Structure formats: structure tokens, C-alpha cells
Length: 594
Image (cartoon, rainbow, N blue to C red):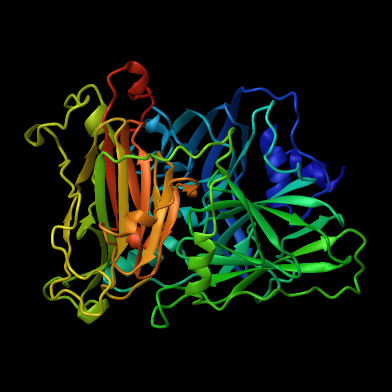
């Protein structure tokens, strides 16, 4: 029995295909992967969430996994497939939810996954079946736990192949190589954030970065813990890249090779060639790698981009993997790439600004040209006072916080979606509900309630945010322009903001404060990049447009997990349309209860 066969006996069907690609420390990449006869069908998966033992950096620990894998199993489907995933919580003392990051969930918000937003958690010993259709999307996304900091180990790729009769808008690659970028923590991440929230200070950082769960040879005790892939000279490979890290934007480069970006967040782009790519937490990217160098071994390296400044601790280490050409001898010395310095904000801004939608006849960029709703949301850090009689470790003896429009989000104790859309809840069709008859307020401000020089050197005197659970009400099918404005409160930094249930077009970006009179004249309404997660530039702003054509309650938050813990999030309540086809489907019978 071969190693490949033995490994596959643990899986069935498509899970085996994905697992062979992602989890073998040495994986071959010399064959195609799409069967042209495949048609849209129902794909079944079973996720068993449990504790498993792993060892990295000479440190062993028990951690939460799916199916005993780190990263977890890939969900491999085709556009148009219906996906049915039975998630069973086999832990004794922890709740779980799973978010299918980037999946539009059209009319199926019950399966989106964020705890206390679209569902109550799956309690120990219980199961919940996520049941949704992948519509109008193809490329790479990912899934992860969406409760506390559990996604540090509970995550995996979602690989969406085109429909059977469609091809890629670029030459078919020789093979596809998933690369899941993550972290290794010697500590329990749940304890890390618990201690930080108790002290009011910042959390500790990870001990290593990982590539498909392996840290690479630059770390202690890790010579064998290195992801390796064998390639054939003069072939082109499709790298499916996921940033599953908790708190770090990441640079990635392969020695002596360029990468051509062809897809971001499961939407095609105009081909863009770069020696280094930047990918934020929550973002995914497909890039072509052409093996046009002499036979040898080339190092793929990953390290952090830190926009927050030298006073903010980061994991300043480097993860590595080996890209080894077939025929390479043991005498071949691996070549190390050159990565940007950790605080290269100019590179970060230029790279993000260079990405454009493909905008072809087959894959048009349907940018809203008119706007029904103008929103300006400030995003940044804040300071809360320390409780009387306590000593806190945050700024000026207070507690770290974060906010949107100076409101620090309070996670409710029951799911927002159930509060607005269950039959027993107040009717919510096409009108803004009477706030006297609902559990949560729907009057989240469209603009900052107290304008100030958002990115100026002088900060407001009172930087304590308000707290609460308030959502922004959006009528069905409205065209929305959302400007995310960074602030300089407690320092400037990039914020990777993720919007659930939607893609948006990044029509503009800039440094300093957004100017509503002059900046829209420079918006790109032709081929802006289409994403679900965007980095708000350090000390700047980004303008997004989308059409609110998906009813439900949709979370929007910073994908730096520490900022979400501090309150940098809000939610949109998008009403049902007038037709049944434009309304949220009924809730499933096994929907968890709080």
C-alpha cells in the first residue's frame, strides 16, 4: 500500500482529493484536476469538531480541529453545486459555529455561520447541517470557525471549480496547489484573548507562521515540519492561496519566480504579475506560477506586513516551504527569496491598487453606477476607562477597544437573524421596523455622529466609544456606497474589513480623509476589483459599492481577530424583497437555539 493510498483511506470522495493536496508534507503537483463530465450536483461532507494532539516547534498540545486535521479538510465543489455539510460538535465543553467565508449565501443566511449573528452556536454533542448552493462564484474561498479565536486551528480551503462547460479565462494549469497560510501558537488562543480582555492590554502574538500547517526550516525543531511540493520544469501551476492567520497581513514570495494574480476572493482579475504578493487575513487569491527556472529547489517564504508601527508587537518570523523541480538532486542548495521589509506600506498600497476586475463579456463587473444610500463609517481603535478599583494594561491605564462610527459592538446573547426573521419575531418585510417593537435597534448611524480630523495628528479628547448592538437597516435591492475611513486614534494601521453575504467593488481609495466633493471624480466604475475582504489603507480610506440584493442580517467586521474582540464590527439588516424569490428562505428545523 502506498503512502498516498493509506492516507486516502481516512477520507472519501472529494475530501480525499483535497486532503492529498493540502495535508501531505510532500505533495506531487504533476496532474490535472477537473473532469469535464462533472455536472452540478449535491456534495456531502461531514465535519467532526474535536480536540486533537499536534506537535510543532518541539511543543505538543491538544487543540480544536476538524476531522483531526490542521488545516482542516478542503471543500471541493463546482459552481452551481449544492453543498451539504453536517457539522458535529464532539467537544465536551466548547460551542462551535462554522463560517463559509466569501460564499454569498443567497437567500440562505441561516447557514452563514457567525455566532450570535446568523445562528446560535452548536453546543457540545449537537449537530447542525449547513445547506447552501454556490451561485455565481468560482475560485478559492475558505471556511473557518466563527466563535472566539477558535479559527486559529479550525479552518480549511473551499475550492470552487468552474461549471463543467466553462474553462478558466487563462490557460489551464498543469495542476493546482492549495497554500493555506496560518499560525502556530504554543499557547491556547482562547486563553490568550481571555487574558487580554481581562487585563485591557494587547494579546500575545503567535510563535510561528505556517504553510499548510507546517512552519518550515527557519524555526526550532522544524526541519521535518516543512511543506514541499514537486513541480515539473516549464509548466504552469495554479496556487490557491488563503490567509487564515488571526491577526497578520502576509507577504509571500518564491525565489527567482514571479506570480501572476488571476483571481481574488473568488472573482477573476486582469492578470497582474508581481514578484511578491500581499494577502490580508480573510482574503484569498489564485496566482499562476510558471516553472521557468533551472532545475533546483526554490523557497516559498511568508512573513508579516505590520502597518501598526514599531510599538505594536508582531510575530516577526518567516515561514518557508520548498518548491522542488523534478530531477533536483540532494546537492542542490535551496534559494531564498527577498521579501519587502515588515512595514513597507508603499508596497502594500501599490499592490492593492494594481488589482482590477477582469470585466469581460462572460464575467462583467456589475458596478452600481448610481447610489441610493451613502454611508461613511470610521474604523479604528479606541480606549475604554478601566473599571473602578482595577488596574488595566491598556493605553493610559485604560482598556483597548475598537469601534465603527464610535460604536463598539456588543455581541448579543441571541442570534440577530432569528430576532428579525423568525416567524415568531416582529414582521420584517420591506419597511424599517418600529424600533419600539424590536429587540435590537436598526438606527446605526450612516455618518460619524461627531466628525473630526479622522487621520490628523491631534486626537479627540474623549476617545471612549459608545457600546451596544445596533444594525444598519438597508432596503432590499438598494445600491450602497460605503466609505470606510481609518482613524489615527491610538495610531494608524490597516484594517482588513470583511462583509458577509456580499461581494463589493472597491471603487476608490486614498490617504488622509475622504473628501465627498472631490474624491468620487476619481472613482473607477469600469473595472474595480471585486472582493469580500478589503484592507482599509493605513491612515486612509477605501470606497465600496454593492447592491443589497441578499436579504438577511450580515456581519461586517475587521478580520484582525483582536479588533473584532475589541468591538470593530457592525451588521447590516437587509429586508426581504416584495417577491418570494427575493426573500429569505424559511429557517431549517435543526437551527441551534441559544
